[in-house]
Image 1 (spheres, rainbow, N blue to C red):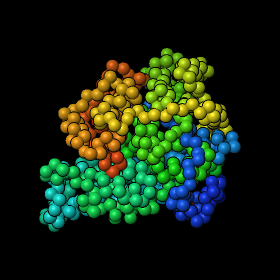
Image 2 (cartoon, helix red, strand yellow):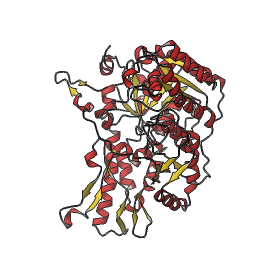
Image 3 (cartoon, rainbow, N blue to C red):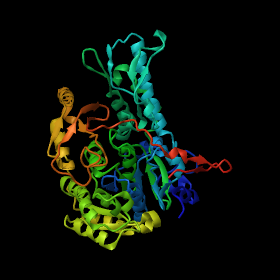
Image 4 (spheres, rainbow, N blue to C red):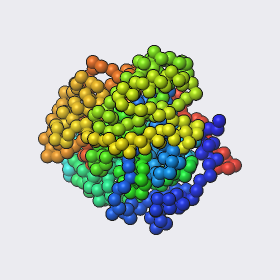
Length: 557
């Protein structure tokens, strides 16, 4: 079997103009980035109605065994195209840090990929570089303001805005800057986040247009003054220059799948602090151009889907028509305590112990959010009939069917069963979409709602610091308009990454709360989450190379 990158590089891509023509996009609406990539002028689509039916792909809590959420999304889109449906795919962009770290790319896998794969996984159209430039422009303007007299009376001990870089680099988590004497700035502690954790990523993905983007940028809190009042980006008059840097980045990127289904790939890879969904502009464009739109959200349904539904759908007026929950037999056995080395062997006992994780996500989607769902089993050769039958029977008790997906090895043809099941529940139209919490609730009540309804916690323990910050935020006139972007481990329904399955008898511990005013939410933080990842002893960048004779990239997966 060829590697992912070998499959992608062997593909015969169509010129992106032909892909655009499939959904009615003319030359005048495209800004080309070579033969196979283009940005789309969404202004030309402004007055068109949304006509497509929205299908969200999510998953169980991730495990080292793998789930295949993006691969399933791509394969499902190709399967729907194969079934004669006008389908558009809307995915998130990969980040350089994970690509060169341990996670790999975010372009799917096997014969269910978006291409050009290596471009997408590297610099693509420069969106993240623009986000990083805008982020660091604001940081430079902030420090320059302090250097030039600090008219806003900023407390240098309470600066919340950090610099960023799109690379896993633990060395930059905590730094001291401004050393070297008076002409080199005011010395202070600082640090870097990875670019995709920047609030600008969240703002770009939620903004409906340039004006909305500029307004949201202006609302971002960058520091506090010595009286304890927030200092906003607009106080530094930075939002205009930042918008100028982002004017092209806000436009969604159009590429194609291996089977030539149109695919928008734009923003949103970090499913903790920056909400982990692709941009509103990309999803909106897809819904205006296609009859069926397949999109995904990051991590498991407890993080990605919750944020897609409670943040993105609320902000953009979206209402999904169906949800696909991706699982593998191997991953469920891992949730049931089966060692990674034994996952290829039939183990019904471990599967039974791991199934509650899947069933919790099924219950959340169908009962909490009121949406019809199908479980997609990303099939491995080692899966036995008895294991698959156990999953079918367990999901059947919740009124949810299971479809096998073999898109990794067969492309769209391997997703026909899943596609037909999605079409079936769409035709039934049995959705009663509702949010996990109401806007009028207090912030503490919203956090309690997510913890109890989505995570299965018995309640929430707030640290003194978190309670103080929530009380201060609650005094704002717009406090009840703020949503939640919950930060916790993606590896468990709980706040403990070592706890698998669907734990009971625990409380969510909130140790801190951040304010993302531009994005329109607060960020309750549980556990020890870092916004600047590091890499292990054998990172992926050791295997990435270029064939100097052909110019082809090697080693990306």
